[in-house]
Image (cartoon, rainbow, N blue to C red; front, side):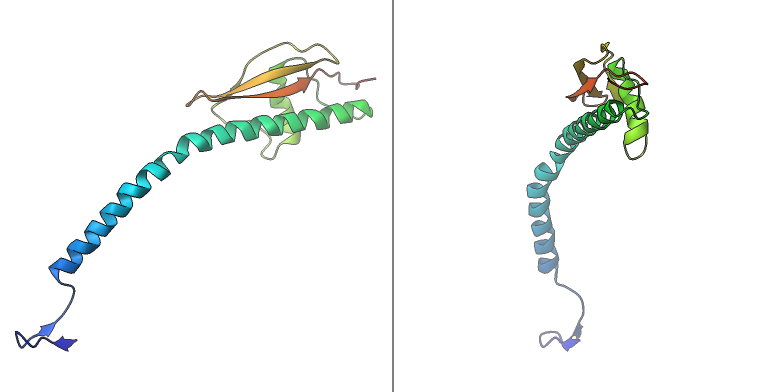
Length: 138
């Protein structure tokens, strides 16, 4: 503590002017940062949908490879069978809540572009599935 020469008392704490300046600076920082961080939500949701679609496409590639060598693989006859691929190939073993895969029939040995939709934002992403049999692709 230092002695205040004007009043003969000890000064403790901050002056009102210093406190007001800190509040003003924090207000300016908040005004600048809020639009930046507020816009990250939609980008994060879109990124999550895109990553999930990419992971399902990779799971499909792995599944087709397993079928091709005659190893036990996941039967794929509809785009909604991506949930079975997720159970077999993705970390966590399932498609997270809030995502819907549009149903679409897939012929055996044929590839089809499937769509996944995130419920809250309605963002979509596409991935490819190939129709497979339990016994594998010849």
